[in-house]
Amino acid sequence: MRILVTGACGFVGSQILRRLRAMTEDCALLGMDNFCRPGSERNRAELRALGVDIIHGDVRSPSDFESLPAVDWVIDAAANPSVLAGVDDRTSSRQLVEHNLIGTLNMLEYCRARSAGFILLSASRVYSIPPLATLPLTTQGERFVVDVTRTLPPGLTAAGVNETFSTAPPLSLYGVSKKASEDLALEYSFAFGLPVWINRCGLMAGAGQFGRPDQGIVAYWIHSWHEKSRLKYLGFGGTGHQVRDVLHPQDLADLLLKQMRAPDAAHPKLGNVSGGAESAFSLAGMSTWCGQRFGHALPVEHNGADRPFDIPWLILDDGQTRQDWDWRPRISRDMIFEEVAVFAQREPDWLAVSAG
Image 1 (cartoon, rainbow, N blue to C red):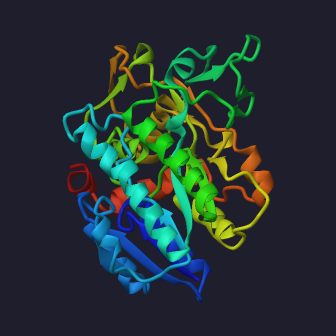
Image 2 (image 1 turned 135 degrees about the horizontal axis):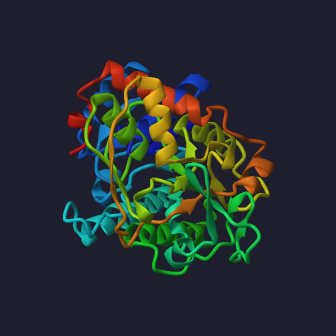
């Protein structure tokens, strides 16, 4: 089996390729990246040493796909992953759509021409912001929890947000670009008979993640704590009680291999993939962990002003995916935190290298 991973030298793409290489000996692995992210060059040599063929290319350019060899599967890990993209003065709205939607279109056209299967790495941020921002919550210790005694919106269970939760705009420009990519992939599957799987992923983290608060909050927080840098709780009263689940991309790779080996499986083409409730954490909880791990306190500033795209609580219910594919994460939240902490101690300049 020949597999192409786009965004190969980004954090998620590179971790997927490492895991695929560790799990398979008979797969030919090809990676494509435009190296626009600071820090991505560091992954190129490591992947090549593992036998991954790395090609410089940009998913926004149709001509960059013309000379690629035929493959059996394309994994779309190329995206601008920031919920603030297009509105934060770092990238334009057009650049965001070109990366996240036009790039997907170009990959689907390549798959159609080469009769390849396609796997889209989508995101939890395709779920509608207004109902997420107004969930019935209460405080428990250092985190928000859903108040199950109150009426819950459709698609929210005790296990989290499932695939039936609203995806009506507003989602953010990032979220709507991923949702449009999902719809496009499903239409190509129906129109051209392409094998397609769509994975709506929870927050991903691990060692070597590029450290920016809008894209890699776990890496940013742990590296900053180790370096005794300034940190701030934003929104929701400035308490740091907002909650997410966390998933290691190598666990995602285990699922992707199952999906590629069963292109005709009678499972839904779209599903949540996450660390689930057992991996949930709050920023305040991560601060407590960091203080214990590094042995020093760090005063965290408080700013309770809410921002348009912030949400107080989002845990994905991925029970459907776990049941259908006999899959569950093997790397726990605390294992992920520890992996990042060890990397932070080994690479004290990583925030400066990767945060651009």
